[in-house]
Image (cartoon, rainbow, N blue to C red; front, side, top):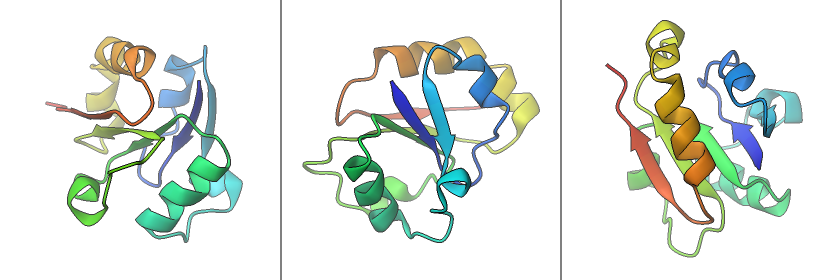
Length: 106
C-alpha cells in the first residue's frame, strides 16, 4: 500500500511498515496543506492510507466519499507508539479504501 504520514507522525514508524511504500507530507512538500486539502491531494496522488496523530480530523473533515483510509494514532510519542507496533501493522494491513481507524496509545 501507498502510505502518507501527516505532520506529527513519528518517522521511525516507517521502519515497521517496510512492506509498504511510505512518504511523509514534509518529503512531498505538503507540510503547509490544511487537512482537507492534504486529504484531496493525497487521494489525487493515489495514496491508500493517511497516518496521522490529529485526533480532531474526523470532526473537522467530511469523510463521506473519501477513498483514502485514515489511521489516527492517539499519541505523538514514539516510545509509546513503538509499543503498539504489531497492532498498528495489523490495522494498516487490514485497512481498505475509505476506512477510518483510531488506535489508542497508552
